[in-house]
Length: 292
Image (cartoon, rainbow, N blue to C red; front, side):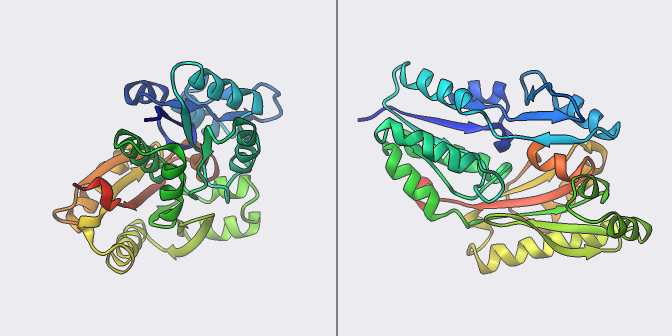
């Protein structure tokens, strides 16, 4: 039986410490701030606290994909240390070019590296990593794990309520005029990540209306797409706003009685576009073969 390693990137939200506990490798994502040429690597020389502090100070943030050298270094190290195959789970190909780059790099490995394009990011990408680990423990080889994760790539949902439009404006995602109007009206946009991209879902006029919108949207997805609460992993999520998160977490638990709701944080690759203060809800459908 092949010994299969799981590798992902920090877009999954998995820290280096958590990766060590899980027995996996996490490639850190690079960030640059302002006009500086210096590159910072998530959870290596850049903490979450430093990241959000720089955002609050008004510094612009630029994201990049891991360099081919860094990716190959990790793959080669893993294969040189007793593993026969690798399942590599990068962020969604719809949100970055890193997945396509990894696929090209993997062509030199004669099938030993299988790159999963399952259109996920943050907590749903993390769930894919945990599912891959469980499938590897069951004896599945890398190509079979890749195929299964790609079969279920659209069986997850994320809804995010922004605290401010400032960071979407700063990143050029909306016009300054639209941001000004939205701020004046105190609108709370709700965004959706389902599959390949981050999209507008609705606009709320109050925080509570935004929360209700996310909860109702998730209830609809769970009932119509995933066959009920028992079939999903459910998450209450935030971007660096512990005080606002506690009541949100309780609201999610109250809205889904009997559900096992895990608290989590949005990964920095999403947070750089939406800023601190965002609240979110996410789910991933459970794989039937892992429920025995």
